[in-house]
Length: 166
Image 1 (cartoon, helix red, strand yellow):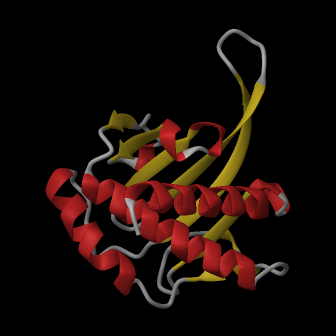
Image 2: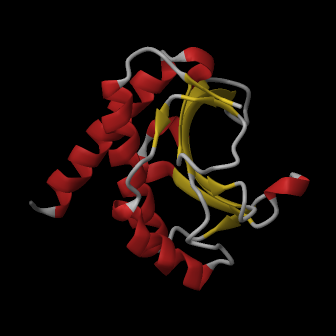
């Protein structure tokens, strides 16, 4: 598959994920690993992280993350106004975090478009520090492509129903 068709397919996946997430409670979709210390609503359980392992390790070479920490994957659609106060846009935000290891990588897709991607890293989520904007490196991009695949597959399977995590 050439690069243009690949990008088109990725945009179709992003649009599909945005539409599914937008129509869910709180316009979000959250998956957790069973052993995660995450407390809150979860829409799916991540039983197999093997698709993410390689890219988590690569990201750990660039940012201080523990690739072995239990994961929380999430997608949310948020409405915001452009700087000039005109149009309202719907941004898709993807997160990969570990409560136990105290880190979060985020990818914000302006208007849900892959061409408008901005990445962030927070190495201290327990103190709710502001995240730093980071470069979308190949490892970060590949990690989020896998996260999109996982979230989209699970979101399609679980059109309703959520899990409660105590």
